[in-house]
Image 1 (cartoon, helix red, strand yellow):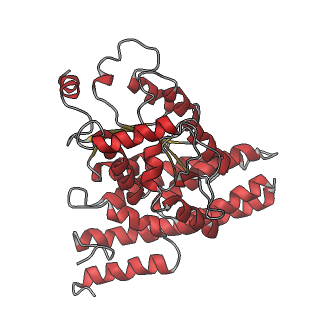
Image 2 (cartoon, chains in turn yellow, cyan):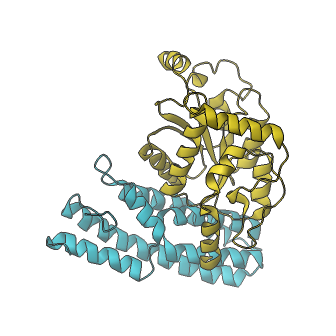
Length: 218
Length: 150
């Protein structure tokens, strides 16, 4: 229970390592994502299914998972296509739980399907990453998460801006580069997604370039 | 250019794997994750891939023995196989996987069968080449990969 005590005492998003829960049914992909995250100075828990992920979070309805949720999860990265519970279903469960809905969830998929991307973002996913996931994707995610964590501490200014934006424009049209295709570059339907994330990624459209690459290669 | 003959051989082998289209950029991504604390990471991932995907190959093989073909199932297996192949940068194998899936979608059993034979060939060829590559890599000892700045 020492881990639990540490997590209680230390503020999240300080100089502590981020704890990422990675969900993927592919053994190879789990190994790779684990390494990507460890190299980016994260603590990683990699599980093979949505069910296991819920179990880990203590959301599976089983009491007595006290030991597990002692270690706070800062980010969830899940594959989309998994047998049993898909990443999308996992996302919905997490976003509908009062305890865990604040945890950013990132969806990873080898298939670049716009309707899929849209549904995930609409359900509250932070980002939709096209597989295979690169080190640059993870680095960018870390920056976004750390910034989110820091709003509690140093970056009070940023937090205020974010709040203000949300209050003023709760249903504004947001462009998240995750949802953009190379052409047209215009924004699509409004998302209830996180404003801060869209602002942060708008400078470089990694997903657009990824998508372009897929169109060429695939 | 490497002075050490083993490392030079390794460089040449590596370049050839990319030039001949066996590997793509994702392999480089894996190399970037390799460091002193984990100097055989790439080899470990590739070994894991071949071990793990053997099961999928077998599943597909067995599914292709049952007529009429269950294209949905075949496609599902191949989707998984393609994903793993993509994760290690297996370019030719991935291309055959894509083709196989297209044949599944259009219900072309002959195409699936032909394509699968070709896929197995590419899969086996890549394995041999990577095994040889890693053998030299181990002999050469820890080295900076071509992508890291000197």
